[in-house]
Length: 406
Ligand SMILES: Nc1nc2c(ncn2[C@@H]2O[C@H](COP(=O)(O)OP(=O)(O)OP(=O)(O)O)[C@@H](O)[C@H]2O)c(=O)[nH]1
Ligand SMILES: [Mg+2]
Image (cartoon, rainbow, N blue to C red; front, side, top):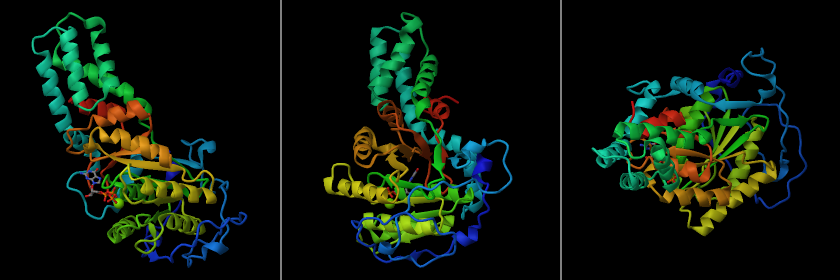
């Protein structure tokens, strides 16, 4: 898969040109003209006036004429999986080398989750010191698990698994943690899925949404690094037009990762910018367009309506766009994260999550509650602020880390 991902020749320098300002987008309500074949010329072009550029429809992109790669079935040629191999390549373009190699990410996640797991382990040990597994201990354990944000459903699942076969017997806290790790892994396994990009869309559009400060822009930068290092051409859209600093922040990520950045003036219409960015990405034959958005609280109706508008406008270009709607969820948030996902999912059609800030939180259990409730794929976890601190999510590793196991 990774080889397939890397199959195209891509010049890092070429894509790393200085991002340019684009004019304020044209009104988006005008009906889209009929489709047209994509332009073959990859050179930078002046952004065309939106009204003159026909809206593209999904196109079949035949596999490129490179030598075939044995690991990848031909039918999968337009799909790529963003995984560890690409993360490893991202190392090469990290501007500031980290003191420790990215392969230590599991250690960092475990250290990060140690606040969650330490508290949990101590509380479990408190329940099971010289006590048999009976109604009282099971109830106490259930309370501990719920307080650790794991959610009622998973708490009951764990206590049920423990009581079957062990009821009335002595049990150690290590055994309890072992069962907990097994049950948490079962809850997480279905959501631990790799992010897949369908490059037949050209661009595959990823819209990134979430509450203020949850890590949208940082995650976009980290993801762009993986994609460009994997040989893909990436365009970033500075859809957070609320704050001038947000546009600058994305431009810096664009420079660091060799991605083109499309931005408009501070205060411009975000949906219009998304529309314009799509046109530009398409004209320049970008593989992936990642759209940043302004952070918003899920209870602010007018801001949530703006997200709906962005989705609607992208659909004028390609009825399937945005193909991925990624929500960043801050792991330090606790229970409120559940309603954040609920509302963003309803409004913007979130179909994948990135759980950020798993380094150093005592509330990592919320990921389990979100998985149990929403069953949305968790593509990555954020374990720090640096470019390589974004890792594909592993149910097994996470479950062991939160249960405080080696
Ligand atoms: N420790 C840690 N910090 C993170 C992580 N992801 C993002 N951050 C930090 O969280 C802060 C907010 O990140 P942003 O990417 O600006 O968040 P945002 O969602 O774009 O914020 P708004 O645009 O204001 O809504 C920054 O200081 C990031 O460096 C992570 O995984 N771990
Ligand atoms: Mg931001």
